[in-house]
Image (spheres, protein in one colour):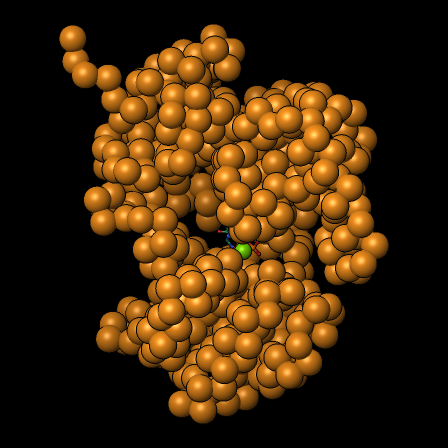
Length: 439
Ligand code: ADP
Ligand code: MG
């Protein structure tokens, strides 16, 4: 008999956690393609499987992995040999992976659809990609979640890289920046960190709202900004709100953020949504009839992300049924795809996803049994939102997060509710999160 791979062992636990039909459909043909001490790469049938599995079974997979003794590893899915953002497993440690946060190959200008909602942001992004300009330095892109900020920032990186291959592009999420600084302090190598930050020719920092309260990182960001700015290097920031409205940032940093140009991205209009769907269909080789595009665009109004995933899902269902992607089929399955929140079991998963996304984490990371600061707080927020937005009990919530005792959930809820009263910015974020899920 062949030796069991880590994935085989995980599958044995997964079998008990997902419906038999689901297991047969989604996991029967999955194979481990490689593993390292912190990463397991699993090959599945097609890109649609990758999307569907990550969207729907992340939680169960994380549970199964921890039961099989692989809770600390990242599990990544891919089809063929093209693993998204694939990293050389033997070289990868959590730290190096964060540090090199590569650009997503799909987030290019070619794949970015423009409309009234994002025209200015797009034009400014193109401009700074081609040439740093004082007036546009820094470029500050703001807008709600899922509207294309990350896509646009990475597009700037891609374009600069293709025109000036020698340039050093540094794209960082605020989380990776904070981590980097924390590690620098801890291992007494802040000089290296500074050296690396200041060597950038193009510096992109995504989601700066998450810097709030991270004093050491705020200071470092301020000095990095000054050094790069003085060298005439282009800097781009993104955030869910304009600098002025981000409470808890130092005034000197806020004023730096406002030195250049602030552009915002609004939710896309109907026509833009249709155009985005067409573009995604083209990229993923999906034959998308107009009436299907209209139906989907009419239903998903706020997030481009949701628009995209609704397309992958209808396509997938059509494939599974062996039918063409038609308006009829779309109408038939739409209620399950969008707004189908009445299904009691889907809500905790959705909350996990939303809170994870809010903190730039993966749902599986939130469920890890770890005391890492970067995880503990988001996890407490997730527990709190679950308590507020669902009828789950403390023991149920505890179980969902790696079998914790109910007092852990109770403590989390008490702590967050106290913090909400002290911190208006946190209060605003949590109110928004809860509002998405309250029936
Ligand atoms: P944000 O960073 O603002 O939360 P993302 O950049 O992650 O949003 O975008 C979410 C998804 O929507 C991504 O897959 C992205 O490619 C897609 N997207 C957003 N805006 C556009 C657009 N104008 N054209 C094409 N795809 C878009
Ligand atoms: Mg983003």
